[in-house]
Structure formats: C-alpha cells, structure tokens
Image (tube, rainbow, N blue to C red; front, side, top):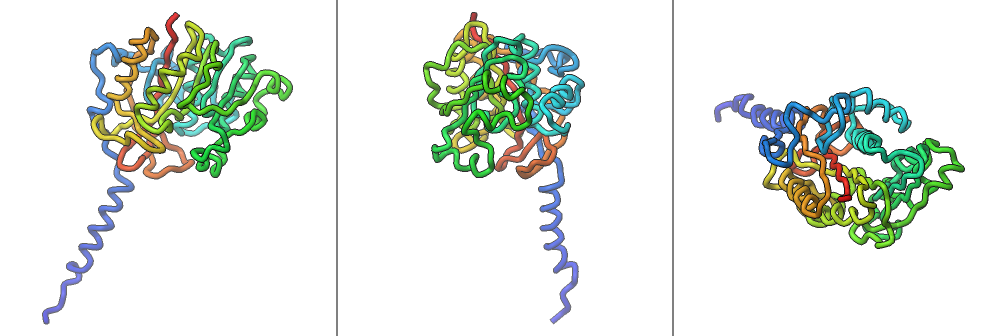
Length: 311
C-alpha cells in the first residue's frame, strides 16, 4: 500500500480551519440593497449626513463618526458612562441629542419611556427637570424571564437612579414607574411631550407588532410631541430577515413601510439617512465594543427614528 501523502491528511483540516477563520475574522458582507439611498421622499440628501457635529439629527443608522463627535461624547459624560464604540451607548446619546434639539429636555416637560430596563435615561431626564413615567414589562410576565435573569428588567422606580444622576429627592418627585406591555399600551398614558425607547420594539413579537407599537404609542403624545425610538436594522438583506420571535430585525423596506404609515396618519418623520461606516463589529453578543452585531445569519446595527406628532 503506497504511503499516504501528509498533505492529503492535513489539507482537509487546514481547509476547515481556514473556513472558520474566514467566518469569524473576515468582515461580514453588507448587502448594497439593504442600505441603498435614493432620491425618494424617505431620504435626506447624501451630502447631508446626520452627524451631531454637522447639524440637527435625522432618522439614521448608528455610526462611529457620530458617537465620536463632541456632542455625543458630552452626553456620554452626562450619562456617567465611560466612552466606547458601543451601539447601546450610541442609542442613548442619540435619544438625548434628538430630544434636546427639539426642546423636550426642559423643566416641566413630560416624558414616557418604554421598556426602560435599568437604563440611565429616566434619571438623566429627571435631573433636567422633566417629569418621567418609566415603564417596563411586568416582572411577573413569563416573557420577561430572560431580561430578569440578566438584570435588565426594571420593577420599580428606585432601580432607575443607580448612577445617582439625579438628586434623590427630585428623582422621587419626578419619576414614576408602572408595568406596561408594549403590545397593550394603557389608554390613560397620554398627554406627554415626548416618548422614547432604546432597542425595544423589535421584541414585540413580530415585524408587524413592532410597527403597530410605534404607530400606537403616538397616541401617548400631545399634538407636536416628539417620539425618538431605536431598533434593530438588517444590513445583510432587504429581502430575508427574522420576521417573528423574541427578536426581529427590521429591513429597509420595513422601515420605509413604517414611515409611510406614520406619515399617512399625519405625523412628521425626520428623513432617513442610511449612511454607515461599518466599524467596529462583533460576531457574537457581548459587552465589548461594537456598532454592528451578528444576529443569526444577519448582520445588524441600530437605527434611530424621530417622529413629531401631527399638530
């Protein structure tokens, strides 16, 4: 029996190792059709990117240039966070800046937060004189088991000032908490100057339920009120995505459909800017710095939407 060449044994293993390395090290492919911009009514001009350093925010994707701007770094300091290129930090800074630009973060303004978890926004807004109603899924609801296990579910207002961003007495006076299912918003939650959520409405159960939430929560605002919400955006495809389950990923066409519905109801949606810079990314969920994340077979990032209720 002739000797077996070593390369015949090693090469298949080497090919498997190379494939694994390409999978976890090579930059993921971003589908052009997922983020392509055109001259339709949805998009802001390509030469007017939505960076905080260059002007007023529009509805846009998370970018490194934005979070590295002086304005976003300023919000990072006020939130008591160490700066990092992390999309959750971008979401918080984006929400703060969008509301600040529109005159919402001022004494006497009323704000409504959905699925706030343990985020610092209620305390920060209260420190600026806003009256805040913070909401999250009822801790007794089985759907919140995963969030409770990772200490991301709020059960009382007292849990929302852990960073001491707000004077305790002012916080107690200005911040209230109540359990709210985003799919069943109570009718008495109304008359607010602004609302927000940070990567939450992708957990409503489906693409359609997420769209329904964003449209329905506009009823909570007074005429002229401002809604600022972030969610998952699919960079891999404008055709395939996760459409139902614990976490869905909105495609460009889903966002455009949502904008049509909101504008059809008379609301003003800031134009979309889907410019992205693709840095940095991670293949697995983690607390390490990343602006893009692999969710199943899809590469995702955060998108922020700014909507003003019809006056």
